[in-house]
Amino acid sequence: MIYFLNILRYNVCGDFMNNLILIKYGELTTKKANRNTFTKLLANNVKNILKGENFNIRFDRVRMYIECDNADVIVEKLQKVFGIHSIVICHKVNTNVEDIKAKVLELLNKEKFHTFKINTKRADKSFEIHSMAFNNIIGGHVLKNINCKVDVHNPDIEVKIEIRNEGTFIYTNEIKGIGGYPVGVQGKGMLMLSGGIDSPVAGYLSLKRGVDLECLYFESPPHTSLESKNKVIKLASIINEYSGNIKVNIVPFTKLQEAIYKNVPDSYVITIMRRMMYRIAERLSLKHKCKVIINGESIGQVASQTLTSMSVINSVTNFPVIRPVACMDKIEIIDISKKINTYETSILPYEDCCTIFLPTHPVINPDINKCILYESNFDYETLIDECINNIEVITNLKEEEYSEFL
Ligand code: ATP
Ligand code: MG
Image 1 (cartoon, rainbow, N blue to C red):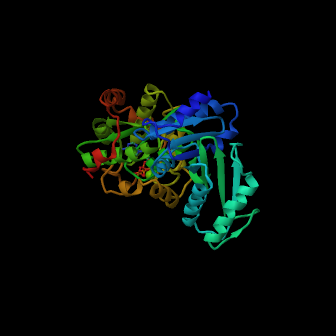
Image 2: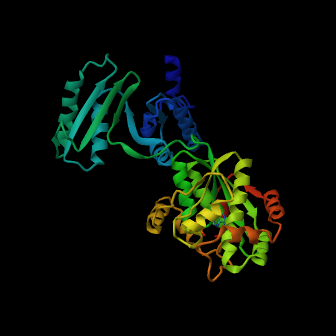
Image 3: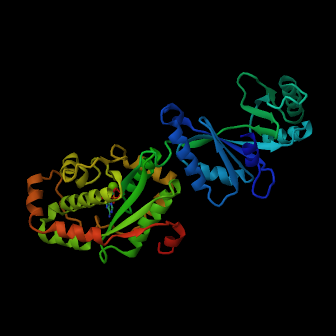
């Protein structure tokens, strides 16, 4: 085992790596029974997101350790991994007083603080200076060079020094992780992804709770354009930075949508269209082993999102439908979309199948019996089969490949 750990401390070139990144799991640690599954999945997700970087990873039930040289790049990527509560960059130096003094000063010179504390742990007992004495040596050096004071009880900044056999690790502040659960720990959900603001946020919030995603987009060419489709793929690729596994199912919706417009009174077209969307979402969820349907509906936002509308639409399926933004104000949803970088893409003015041919007076309290009656006017089952059989699946989401159309 010791041999194994020692091997891990070298990169492929055989050189020592200079940074050790320590990861704390946060919410995971409260789920005792599932902890092993969680930590293994988290480690896999971390490896996935760091693909192409040079690093070594080890983990136990409470911590994960990543050894690397380019800590800044690695930390930026780790800040998109759900399940990580906090990140600490440890700087490695040779175990000698001068090197340690220099590194501590270098780190503190980058910080703004008035009071500090040095906290040494001496795991390597062959190092002859005891921890307390060493705190004084390094603390004295800091006081000589920086205008500040020692406060051992409530310091602005604490410098931790760990003297180990393989070298000395020095670290200061914790960097906040994004929290949540590791993506995939809850299985998959089918996200109805439009080009709007709400559904990418709904997807992000689901990923945060450990639900990996498959996406579903209804397109109606020629009424909706290639730009609209590419906009959705780009949105999917942005939220895919938190997953790495997302696919987009593009459903050709034109024929079904035209049949709805031909056979259903104006005020009911949106209600019936959304009932069809739910039916298709359920079929696809079963096919791709998704446990729930997820969408960006928000109570009261539009006519199809009154509570009556939602229940009439929802009644075509027994599948659970999760609406992560149901109770948020638009402003709150927009704040999240800006934070996750989907906002600028979402506001591009390309049309969605829900926004073309909008009726002037969509019903806000639809009657389910009327829905059933209007649906009996045409053979929607065959049209739904056709939609399902002609789906285009986009895998390997790469933002840059689609941005040229936008
Ligand atoms: P968003 O809600 O994403 O901002 P929107 O407000 O234009 O877009 P709504 O008309 O409010 O969309 O639709 C509610 C939800 O229905 C969307 O959040 C999305 O989950 C789903 N949806 C709407 N249009 C489509 C579509 N073309 N493809 C897939 N899902 C869709
Ligand atoms: Mg909406």
